[in-house]
Image (cartoon, rainbow, N blue to C red; front, side, top):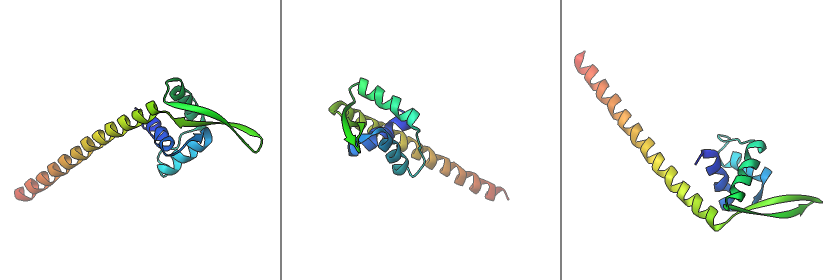
Length: 115
């Protein structure tokens, strides 16, 4: 699952939202690291809804109708699977970083010994 899809599920895991609110919540929750456009988010929301991961309902605010999206049970399960997968990927990245750090220290020690 792409990070942008993960972040969309993540913000919807907190509460139901309309599309533009999802865009704002993703940007805020990632401190601007992930800043999806509405043109990216709406097709994603439609895809999730078609797959049964989201349900939607109409809400009228100031005379305007908005579609509010909420995670279904299937969506909550998918989010949990994604969390587990990203945690595993993060562990691999951190382990690679530790290994690379160890190699740098070994090289530095070897270079000192040569001098």
